[in-house]
Each structure stands twice: as C-alpha cells, then as structure tokens.
Image 1 (cartoon, helix red, strand yellow):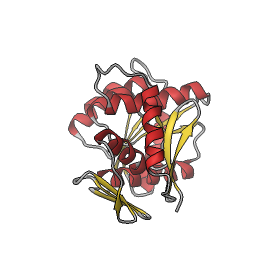
Image 2 (cartoon, one colour; image 1 turned 45 degrees about the horizontal axis):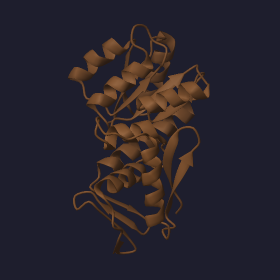
Image 3 (cartoon, helix red, strand yellow; image 1 turned 120 degrees about the vertical axis):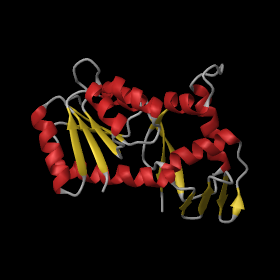
Image 4 (cartoon, one colour; image 1 turned 135 degrees about the vertical axis):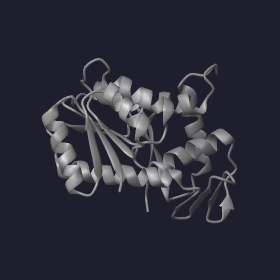
Length: 224
C-alpha cells in the first residue's frame, strides 16, 4: 500500500483529502505544518507528498526545496488556491512534480497521484524501454533500434531524467542544480545548448520529443 503525506493547515481540506485517499486504497496521513511533516517523515517513509503553499512559518515552496535537498525522487503535488503562472513556475523551480488549484476535483487528484507514482517507479528502474528506445542505467547507454547513440555523461543524465518523467516539466534552473557543479561558471542558457545537441542526436527517433515549455524549461513527450 502506497503511503501519502498530506501537508495542509486547513483541517477540513486535510481531512477530506486523507479520507478520500484512504477510501481509494492509500495509507494517508495528514499534518498541519511543514515542521510536523519533517517530524513525521523522520520516522515514517512516504511514497508521495501533497502540500499546500500558504502555510504558517514555512510555506510550501520552502518545504519542497527542503525535501528536494534530501530526496530528489519522491513525488510532490501542490494543492493551492493560487492559479497564477508565477506561483506555478516558482513551485516547479522548487522541485514539485505537479500542481492543482483549489477547490479540488478529488477524482482528478487521484488520477494525477496514480500518474506520479508510475513515474516514480519508472525512474527507479535500471532499464527503461520506450518504443525503439532502450535505456540501461547501469551500462549508461541509450540505444535506438539497436544502435547506440553516442552521449556524454551529462547528455545521458539529461535524457534519462526527462524520459523517466514523461510530460513533467523541468526548469533550466532545476536541471542546472542537478547536473552541473555548484561552482560551475555556466548560465542556464547552457542547458539550451545541451538540449539542442541532444535533439540533433535523436533527430531520427520518432518515439519521443523534447519540448520547450515557454518560460519554464523542458519536458519529454512520448509519441508512441
């Protein structure tokens, strides 16, 4: 049974979400603040986090950033009353995986949770197959129709990251923070250079496309 932590200081929303998740077969636990979430997660491993943005003391952005420093893979879903692009962008740059606006459609939330958990399981796999594309994370190779595509270590990491999380948008800053050294003298435009190079190398592959998300960054779209 998947474990889900719900972090929201609105007790009614928190209770409703937890009740709905339990009814649908998840082990859900609710807390009212980021501090309570830290205490709970220290003792209880979770498979997914649902978090509000506006919370006392530590807001959702700070909370997501803190989680990402210790766990790069656990899915984080924001639920918030904020529907503006700036808030969404800041959330994705903090490391979240998806974003929903209140009032919540609980049936849609369930679908999004299922998708996020599938992505997380794919990301943990040592082998990933997408149509004619075969990725072996132990050998660190990517083959298309049986032919190995020559990639640098960083190019491999970027392609694997995107394809392990299909349709998830990663900002340039997120990718820089993960795949470039902290002291590297590079700007986020360096990511654009790498993406152009990667697109060129996979130009003949029709199974996926690396799409530019205006104002944010990049995502991989599976086309099979």
